[in-house]
Image 1 (cartoon, helix red, strand yellow):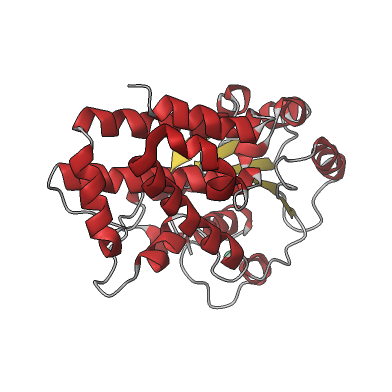
Image 2 (tube, rainbow, N blue to C red):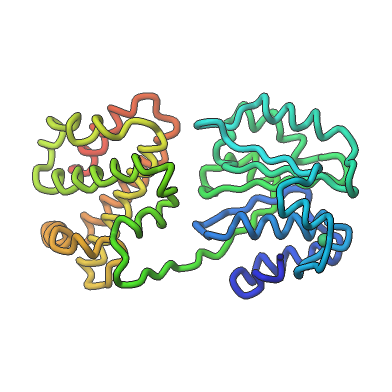
Length: 312
Ligand SMILES: [Zn+2]
């Protein structure tokens, strides 16, 4: 229930609680997850407080509304998830059609769009007006992990609420791989294959740091044999950034967070690079990561990366 998040997410807890109590809820919210692990549960608690006629924020003894929402059986909530890389326009049109009907239960309807950064121009255009001027008693909840890749036309129509990222502390005995699964929000079961592939990303950087431009010659074996889809690229680039950040921390004699098991190699790469080279590399990877979703030719992206990394 919403009150459970009072200490963990004090800011957005207060904003939403006030809005509900004063009946001044916005018609569209955009939640930035910031890797907050309980984001889904938080949002569900908010939806309960919003839709339940009693606006329950602490655990009710017995409330049919809260119970139906908790068990995903409430008829007035519609959840939209991306199909592959984008959210399809057809889904959004169907949603709007469905939401012309009056609610059967209670007096409000809520739709949740997960992966709001996966609304492309076309699909976004089909829903902008609906977000901006919904019929009475419709609340939009959009959710993203990448606020800055959400289209500005969408961002400007929503109240943006960012979860505070809760720093993850790992017990000493945690292995690098387990930490990465957590930090990259991988699912250990469904993403098992991807987890294996990500080990190759570290191999790639280690090879590149030794051989520089020569990595271009072996890029198929080093990279393309493993990393293929846009999603794999996205996680791989994220991982490279984390790896270089740990290398930079080592260089600055700061504690490293993830790659303790690889400390010798990390130290070695730190020794070979200056601080400004490492910053440049992190920035370059971040920059190219942004272009993954618009890039039709991912093969060329890797050539570009290596050449740019050598650039400074
Ligand atoms: Zn209730």
